[in-house]
Length: 336
Image (cartoon, rainbow, N blue to C red; front, side):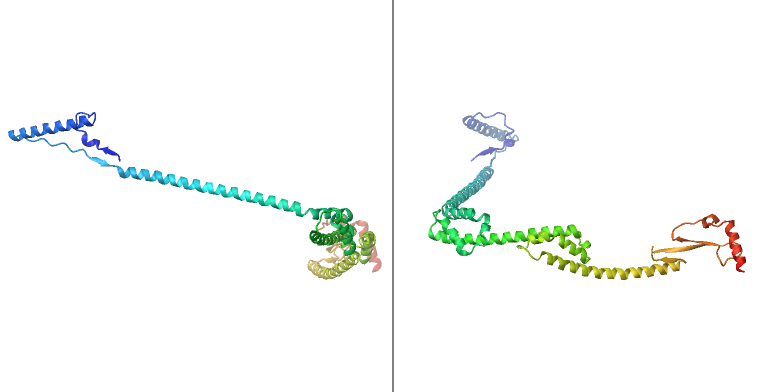
């Protein structure tokens, strides 16, 4: 335990005590002197001096205990976290060791148990090619004879051989189906590219039957080469073109009907503007007349102008001159 002195209460002292022994001696001497002085003052009826305040030593043990407790708790928390970290590291190390052990066991099992499978597949690949596609037409008997021939060059046990024979046959069948599927896709892509080159990307050039027949004729070489994989390329194209042609004919009928409706509407609009409708140019045509003299019933000259064109109201623009007037007058005179 630690004790702390209250320095403020000892400010009235005039000397510093050197050690415990000298402190005790000074206290005894001070007490004896104080007693004699008090006796004399009492006897002489003089005022007594006030006694100095006692030195109070405060108990600081609670602060010390709090500090020690905090240090202990902090140390325990650090130890706790350190212990957790050590446990985590140990767990990870154990997991990695277990994984490495399992991987090693799998590798060992693979190298030992799959030797028969690898040797059989290597031998059958030499006989039937990759994926065993060269033996696609082999029946179970012929394919089995080839497997039995390959067994002689391996260390396969009976039960291993029976298991891997089934797997190799299944792989052969799957490879054959995939190869056939790829051939169909390749043939289709080549034939489509040829047809689109002749008919366009939207087949608009082959909506007429003669043009479609010509495209089929140009691409018949590809169709012949792909007969084994897909024999219906040309017939499917004819069907597709027939459907497109039917849809196109329906659309043409709709467009034609709409065109006639627009033509009639434009004709009415031109008539309302005092013009005629030209069905060849789909435009309004105005007639510009040139009258001379007092006769406003029969024009002397006229010209046609499309809507939006300009004209000049002069004799030269109409091609009228004095000679024309004389000729017209002469004709009118003779007619009368």
